[in-house]
Length: 217
Image (cartoon, rainbow, N blue to C red; front, side):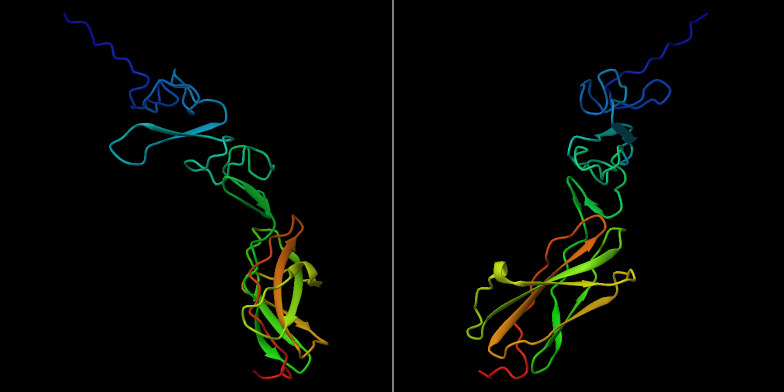
C-alpha cells in the first residue's frame, strides 16, 4: 500500500499559500515588506498581485517615504498627517510622498469689472481637502503703466484679507474689490487660501488690469 504524498510550501517561490504563509513576494529577502521566512514585516501591508495568473504577494512598507501599492500617502511619518498604515490623510492636508497643510493654490484671478477708481476680482475656491477655508489673503501689486513685459515687485505689494462666516464649497466664487486706485498704474492680484490647518501657496497672479480712466495707449 502506497504512502500518502507529503506536500510543503516553498517560501520565496512567488506562490502565496494563505494557510502556510503570511506573504510570498518571490524572494527570500528581508526589508522589502515580506521577510525571508514569508512573514509580513512591521509597518507593511501585502496583497495578491492583481494580474492573473500570478499568486505573488505585492508588499508595501508604510514609512519609507515611497508611495507604493494602495498607499495614499507616505512621508515617513514626519508630519503626523499620514495615517500609521499610510491609507488615509488627516483633513486639511494634501499628501503623497510628502504632506503639505492647507488648501491648493488659488486659480488665476479674473477682473470682469472696473470703474474709474476700482477693480473687481473674481476667483474660484480651491480644494481645501476637507478643512473649510476661512480666509483669503489678497496681495495687490502695482507697476507704472507702460510696456506689457513689466516686472512685478511682490515684496512691495499691499496685503489685504477677505474673510467670511459661511464655509463655501469649491464651486463658488469669491469677490474682492480694490478702490482708490491710480489711473497711472497697472495692477496685479494674487491670492492664497487658508483653513484652520494652514495656508496654501499663492496661485498665479492676474493679468495686468487698469482702471477705466487709465490713459489709452
